[in-house]
Image (tube, rainbow, N blue to C red; front, side, top):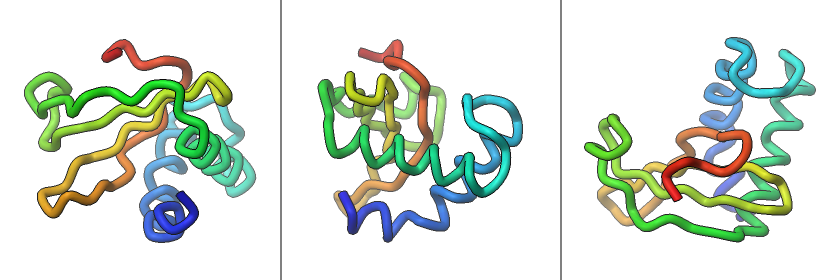
Length: 101
């Protein structure tokens, strides 16, 4: 999880910062809020309670196949894009449990 977080640092900052700025995540706008959201992402990935099957791009209305990881510990869902090379890329943080479970 630590290596994934490091490899995705810029993407996490950009995506979480934008979503927080739009008021779509319950964190304070700015660096502190983004850092808090990144901690929730890490906690969710470190303590998964449920992991979805791969959700096809048609099901999630996007360009990428997605995997959702929910944690009861954080009460959040992390959405990861499934890349062609078998790797994953951060997509978004969802407060609560995703409706895709």
